[in-house]
Image (tube, rainbow, N blue to C red):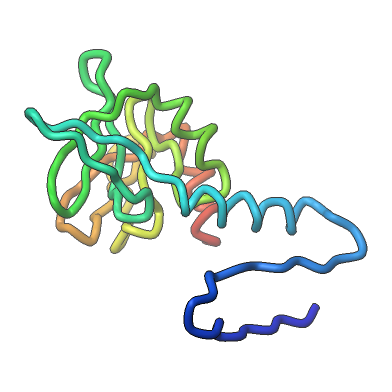
Length: 145
């Protein structure tokens, strides 16, 4: 596979052209990831409505039937269910780590095993989150360990 990167001329918009003999799962996954990264989520905080960029989100957590997105700038309510977020961003770095949380794997500084087969992840914003033991294998697979 050959990759060519060109800088567009002034006034031209960025574009991606894909030339391939067959549109296989890898290419489709890459295209889906690029498209998902361009989409934004709507977050609600107090009386403000904010557009959230998915790659800036550290994790999502469900509390009392509400889903919250934790970013470096604050905590926002997201009016989606966790499974909807998983479906919307399947090819990004989001990974379910418990029944009530999804983490952005790119925001993990390190992980360490803790009690009863669970793991603890230290995020780059110095928050700790627990990975349930039933999700540890998938996390290891995603991290390549």
